[in-house]
Image (cartoon, rainbow over all chains, first blue to last red; front, side, top):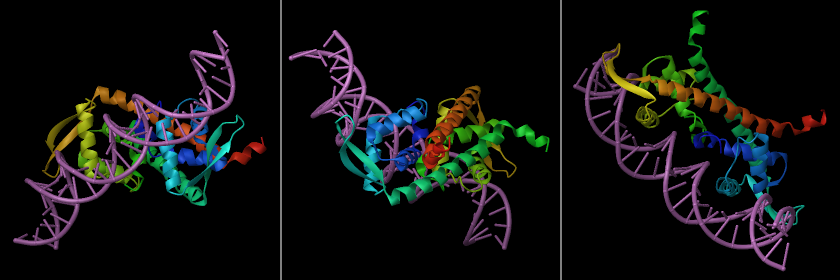
Length: 118
Length: 118
DNA sequence: AAATTATACTTAGATTATCTATGTATGTCA
DNA sequence: TGACATACATAGATAATCTAAGTATAATTT
């Protein structure tokens, strides 16, 4: 991962569920897809992503099934559940709100003098 | 904190250094200020913030000094250092970049059908 | 045909950061 | 005098990522 470990935490589930809302995917595919979409900024380690998927399944946000892909290799696909879609909605809102609040704090910092014009 | 623990991680230092770039502040003040600016979304626990300040000082990003405030109570003020300003700049850029990349992933998710219009 | 590489999944242990909970101490206000 | 807000500190619990190693199969290269 190119980013600090801390930055990733808290958005991992959001990212994974987002991709699974589009279509069923398998773990390795999710890693690649995140890498491509972020223009190589996200580079999840397998040791990070697979446990996340297991956790999501344990919580009932996704369900897994085995299937042979176009290569002939058996893969473990994950499908988002209704509970997962709900969770995704909540996490998306939380994320947007969080970003906005961070911006409120840091934006003021660099532009304190602006207030003197108001 | 109203947000998931994970969300906070990675932006704590950014938030604290941002506030310290504006002016010297003491710990308790930082907690209050974050609470106000975020419209009550950020509610850092003392057990979270104080260790962060200690960590920042150990890394040389801030320096502390004791001073009596307007109340007469002795407070421990923190001043950002040059290294801290550098660090803040880097973390700000990382944050902006990170947000953008998250948005690239999750925006596509909810609006897949938009592509059919293009 | 054999060796290498990419794909695909798994898990144990180390690291790190927040949170909980508690403790200490001072100043203000009723 | 008692209650409350201010102000700082730290130990231990919790949780999530990363490192690192292992297993197995398909595709590619030599």
